[in-house]
Picture 1 (spheres, helix red, strand yellow):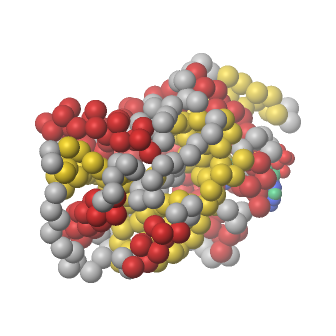
Picture 2 (picture 1 turned 60 degrees about the vertical axis):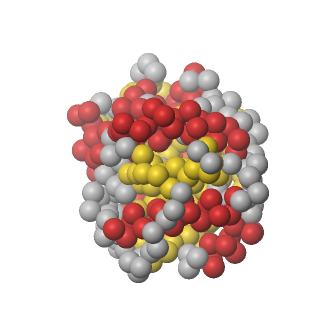
Length: 323
Ligand SMILES: CC(C)(COP(=O)(O)OP(=O)(O)OC[C@H]1O[C@@H](n2cnc3c(N)ncnc32)[C@H](O)[C@@H]1OP(=O)(O)O)[C@@H](O)C(=O)NCCC(=O)NCCS
């Protein structure tokens, strides 16, 4: 994307792609914006951890023109990240320094992200945000986003007694080429434009986490992407970025469980306290199932879409558009 500038209240907002030298400032901006939000939201002074440097570098490596900063008077005051999963493009996180909020910086970043995702050929453009924040809802509703589903944020405390999992393989760099075609195929089965290839590659090649595949009779029938690097590198939790099961199978639930067991086992063996998942509330069966597996509901986001129609097939999967 080229650099573009917008005048706002006699000041110029410059939106440009992020550079390696910006990373530390982008981490600071994120920390200040989210800490301020926590103060407003829960009334408690809370210093939000800085986002992992490794995570930002990975986003920049995969989508260099989709990682953006907003500058005013030569200083970075906001940032945003675009993600392209085949034809599905989503935005997040997006943040603006509190002193510069409500002056149009957020909307300038949002429009630049949308332009980038359209140029990348995305036929779906969406995002997830906190459903209880009037400002965020106003911000996205007035930008043309329509709520499509509630996304449940659930968490399980790790007790370290997770069972060994059968039929699930851990994929390393050498095994990646043989499964990426299946990762792409299974994504499309769940939603026609969805392709997790780059996300799976990022997890393995850049050591952001782990990729597990489940096989039945030699065929890949599901996969999970577990992020083990979150916010600070020392984060005590891991997060399941995606868990996809072939929706045409009658044994979806068993495949889902095998992959979830493996994610939990890997998290426990890495010393993580808990595992975080974000899943659609459109499958009450899945919610019940997660409760039966000792996951607790911690909150909810709302998924919003501006372009295209996004629907998912099958009941047992975890997809998250949260950065
Ligand atoms: C959400 C965020 C990125 C918006 O950035 P921003 O620079 O303030 O956005 P803009 O100035 O372009 O627009 C803000 C809009 O919210 C409105 N607004 C401000 N406070 C509001 C409130 N309490 N209730 C409703 N609307 C509110 C403003 O009036 C403006 O709307 P308008 O353009 O119709 O007048 C910024 O608030 C932020 O960084 N928040 C913390 C992190 C976060 O929540 N990120 C989004 C996660 S999905």
